[in-house]
Length: 325
Image 1 (cartoon, rainbow, N blue to C red):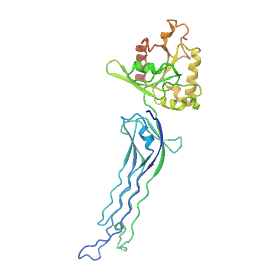
Image 2 (image 1 turned 120 degrees about the horizontal axis):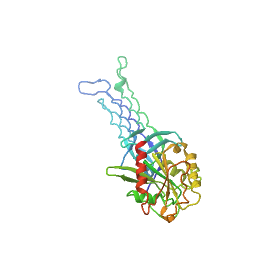
Image 3 (image 1 turned 90 degrees about the vertical axis):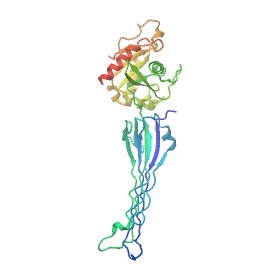
Image 4 (image 1 turned 60 degrees about the horizontal axis):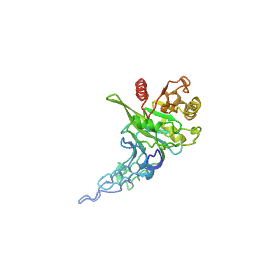
């Protein structure tokens, strides 16, 4: 199951307490202080794992707590540090603290780490407090408490090309035709309920990633339909591929609706390179007269994912734009 949102609590370990101890050996009846320091509490990290593609494990665990540090002991022995814990997350994970909109960190690359909660320092043993004028301190320092935070964890898929269109515009069919991805395909709205990624091969040794994401409807930027759950995923794409069913009426109006929803959600999306593609050309029976020569000055292509018409040209165009960006 694809999960792209979770709210979790993380708690680092408390530091161990310092020890009050005095050296006691045969023939040394009044040895000096030898209490050791407490160990550091365990840290909590988020770490990117390229093998993961969803936040499912994070969502259902919800709470993470690192080990406490061990107390110090006599003989100036320092307590053992608490064990750090690592929370594995997919590439493209965004962390926000509490319900604030400010992004704490954006984890994009495999192996990226973020220290989410720092373990408490261990307390000093009484040996650390011995001075020339205070040779037998009978006190030690307690360990510091760990940190506790609540994080909102979001996943934004990473892809070169993002498919934008109304439900049933042919996005899933196109992805399945160009890649080995197997999204669900059916003739009713919102067949796609989660993002799907596929690798589009170009010539012998090159490729790029295409994302099929749930369809837009008017009002999506305000949360209608699958709304913002869809829109956040196209923020990372390099190219937007607008797919419009060529059998629909008012093709310009559909394009303007899609454009308006992107603008309302994040105006920066309009600055991305884009291509407008009329899909399902096989249903026009060869009559292309109803298709406008251009839409608002954008380059347009006509394809049929069923027959394969126009797909080679589309891949060539996409790869060319990716090499320019």
